[in-house]
Length: 190
Image 1 (cartoon, one colour):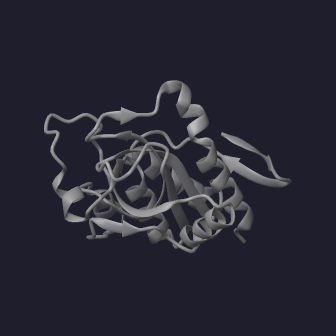
Image 2 (cartoon, rainbow, N blue to C red):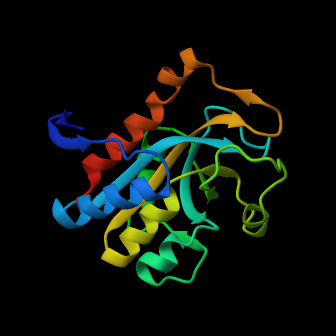
């Protein structure tokens, strides 16, 4: 974890681990034990469609999951949850001011990275999910239960149908626009 200054303002950046259980713990503790009001998760994702391209930046509007996390943790029966609070809109405004294109979308939050069946998972088809990642659903569930703010920004690193992907060398530089967007958005939050 790192707390420091970005453009003169103190911000904290920390890893959330991988997957629903890990971000479920980290985000809950940040919200409840450290009085954090807003979490902007950043990461990479695999696109389910070749309509997306590597390096595209997704601003997650909804996360759908077959996980029972939200149900068992907070009694939420929905399998699709929204970003929480105004940070989604603030990201869009900040991106527009930076002339940076972001794509609002619904993603599939999965517990599974490698799977035998390579067809589109049922829930991803049900909600027309454009990409897959592993954390947004739990983050949104915790924020909804605790009345906090949460958003997820993702850079497309892989196009699943075509096999296109960002190289290891490209990955570090490819994430910079998304990282700077998250930081600049944080500066605009109350």
